[in-house]
Length: 208
Image (cartoon, rainbow, N blue to C red; front, side, top):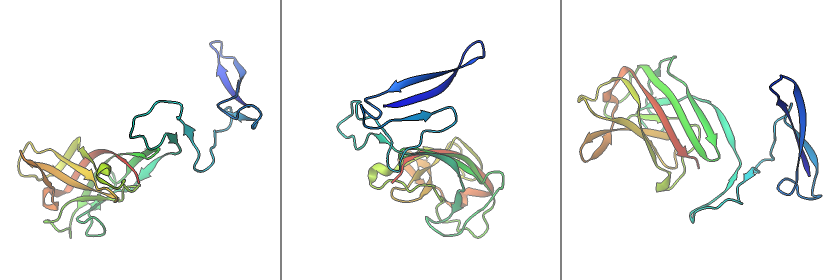
């Protein structure tokens, strides 16, 4: 069995140590023993191991039920006129960083990205955000789209267009789009972005 130890503050501001014995699910009878000390330590799992939700019900398409990863941090987006390489914008130092949270294989990206110059970019090319921190899952089920919640310094030419992007499956970039007509979306080109353009994004996708 494993003994779980934690500190539980009381309303009188005194601190009591409580120990709870956990057997069966953790360790099992006689399989191993130890102490998980939540007072000063974290719970550390071996690489590839995680929390198993196998006891819960699942749908027919289930492909996994072990949570093996959590990660959070920052990443640096790149505004470009190509899916890889290409000509890139000079980013505004106040709007050049994004945040990410990865839970299992689900990745959520947030941020406000903006530029100070697009000199050298091909105005006829599409606009892309390169450098996604994790590769998008392959297959058509890997595609995911998002609408920008805020925009500034754009030049779509017509009011009322919704501008957004979609993450390309099997790749590490997102492509800008806009609703050009009642029939659907079209490519958002560099010509629709000005030197001081910026957009606020929130994109969640499944990683490879």
